[in-house]
Amino acid sequence: MNETAAIERRFEVIDGGGGGATPRVGRVPQAPTLAQFLRNRREQLQPTDVGLPSGGRRRVVGLRREEVAALAGVSVDYYLRIEQGREKSPSDQVLDGIALALKLEDDDAAYLRDLVRQPRSGKRCLKDIEPEIHSLITSWPLTPVHIHDCALNLVAANPIARAVFPHMEIGDNAMLSLFLDPEVQKFYRNWDKLTTRAVCWLRVYAVRKPNPGLTAGIEELLKRRERFRMLWSRPDVTHDNSGKKKLMHPEVGPITLHFQHMTLEPSGHVFVPFWAQPGSPSECALRRLSTA
Image (cartoon, rainbow, N blue to C red; front, side, top):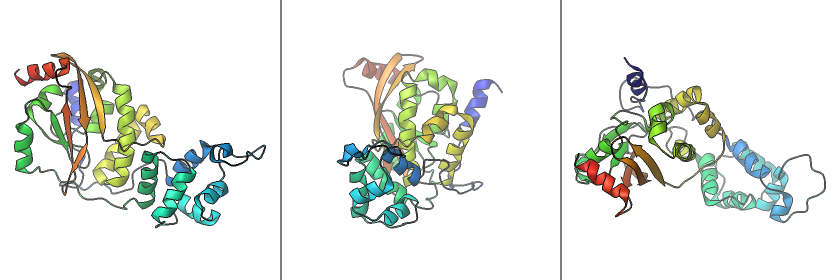
């Protein structure tokens, strides 16, 4: 088996519980905890940022817990229970108060709620796609579509998607492919930016949609890729499901595609359409690939 084939085998399905051997069930590994997230955000603020006196020399970086608690309108003990994960059901009003005290952006505030209220276990991944969905994406000749299960294994792709992304085959895992395949790093002209965004998105997705297959994939990447370990250790998040991929296609050259992640309910499949700007060279490249 040559090196490329060996790499491809590593991207085959990470079972999300839809069949075969059942992976070990566990919490998402080594992501920044609630305490780490809140501490990081406290350290990014100075007392003067929130209207408090500096108080001269301080032994802590950023805001103290008691200062956040006062700004949020809760007791220090109650805030500490939240930060340590011991308070299981704080009200929206309390979480809004903490978000306001820490000047959290919308994505960070939403992630705070996700961390506090994350489910302890997730659904089993479904792999089968409804026939109507297959018919729909096949009818889109210039709109590449990938559909992934909840562990991010590719379970469906229309003809134009297979032409645009020749490295992705049914069964490949999107995250493993992005980080482990050296050809993919060459394929994406904005690979650095894509990987950074992907981990910010994955951190949110993993909290909201925990499942054994996803956990196994994250563990694999933590073992094998320093860049993933570095990105995963950060508390950065995004709830933005859109983005841009800049490709260097082996047949038609550079292509720029926009994309959007959507969740198909109730199956939980991740539906990802890609499109080019109308009238752009990238759209012309899609037309060439669609007739190849």
